[in-house]
Amino acid sequence: MTVLPIRLFGDPVLTTPAEEVTAFDAELRGLVRDLTDTLRDQQGAGLAAPQLGVGLRAFVFHVDGVEGHLVNPVLSFPDEQLQDGPEGCLSMPGLYFDTVRRRHVVAKGYTDRGDPVQVVGDGELSRCLQHETDHLDGVLFIDRMDAERRRAAMRTIRTATWFTGIAAKVKVSPHPLFRR
Image (cartoon, rainbow, N blue to C red; front, side):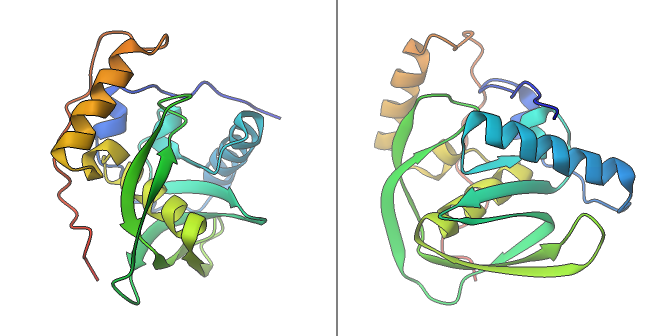
């Protein structure tokens, strides 16, 4: 079991788009194992490779009894239903902020062996799949918030015991919420 340290808000790797995986090899399978072990240790819902400092498009998830991983995921949205509710991030430990996400998602990608896979999610699983894919795009969930929520979140982040004083550049997401 390998539990690795999780990069915290302010680390540039979290706002840098990850590279597409091109080698489905033992190294990738090791990364997926490390992600899985670290996620289990932290008891989170999802964990993306950039959160371990690895700039590759891979993440693991465990939500409502559904667990797995996706490599090079691509999301599509079967409808326009939205959900608004609390969302957290292992890179911002202990903090939760209301965030609007799509209610339903279809995530297509690959296993760590290169086999095609599809995950259909709604509710919390949908939220997790979107959150982790955003990590791969260098987008943090606070980037998804409206200006008022984002300002309130930043005030809270600045008071967190883990905050180093080096804030990530908060941006408006380049990925529209209503993308299909």
